[in-house]
Length: 87
Image (cartoon, rainbow, N blue to C red; front, side, top):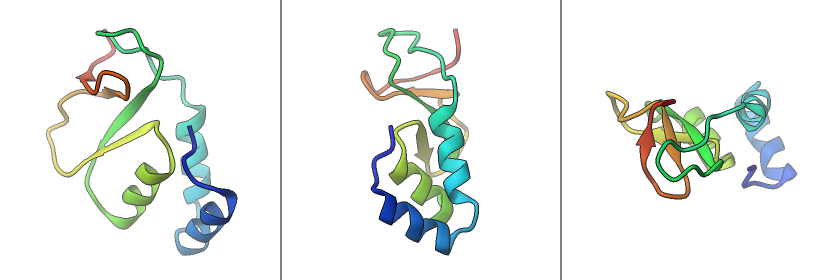
């Protein structure tokens, strides 16, 4: 779910061209349900904190950012707060 308003998204796009399309691609991604609690509220896990990834993480619940690897799982459940792989 997008967590920011259109004005903020436009400001982000001005500073980071193409970021709006990246955010929308995460929003439209078909992510698996949590393998533990079965919630559909999940996110793709990404590694590396740079301004662009911080903006994306702040803009959508479908993008989970961790500071460094390795990834504890390919996906993150926003409901039970656990990392998991597809199955």
